[in-house]
Length: 312
Ligand SMILES: [Zn+2]
Image (cartoon, rainbow, N blue to C red; front, side):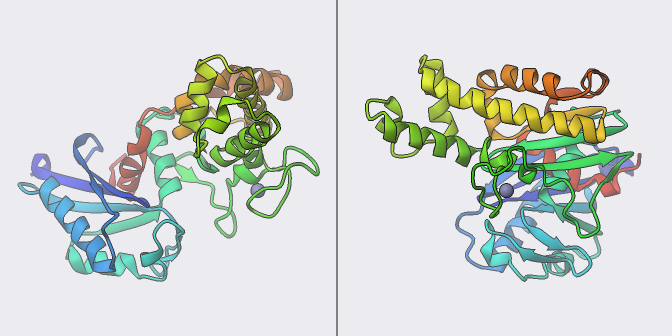
């Protein structure tokens, strides 16, 4: 009976396992989030998957499982190749192990960034659009392009690395080893670096009052009227706007969806970003590519993970 059948979507990140149940047409039913910080072995993770799936589908037939994982995956082998946030799972054939835990339920695995892109494209801000570029603004800057329901992967899966698009020749050094990347101007780490530099030059700055320079702390200082911190946000916003202009000119997607933790401080950078994308892209491009805020927040990945099963 279709009403008693569900899909369960998972999103495994560095600190939590998020899980949701969905009807066969992709409507959200229930959800839960489990702390994974006590997981010391692969089996501990597998137990959490089982617990969550059992609680979300206890009275229903589990028709398919979608799993999003934060890391580089070998999809043919069903393996986690590398994941800085999930070191215990590196090299582990996770897909096979999950299939052993849930026989005979079909299971689909994908990278978490692609899952979040699918979530916003099929059930969030990009719903109904022919094409969408998703920009994830957080510790780093991630991106993914979806067109006609397909993610542009590139020949080796590296397409969409928008955070490492060079926006300044011979610019600031980036974590990737290059210089002048978008991420070196607008990301949690870049903002913290600029704030620290300012505090070193201005010992009376309130930035120096905190050991940890987080985006939340910098947003609070901006709200309190600190001009130097406001300028740091606006400089970052300008860089973001240049990056968005490049996306508009290159791909002209129907929508560019902004998600991630830095969006909590959007009032400090988004207006500057908009001026920059309007100044640096063709009018026809920025008039037709709509910049939108993500709708699913941190739950985009669980919804995207079950998309391969959903009847369109
Ligand atoms: Zn880079």
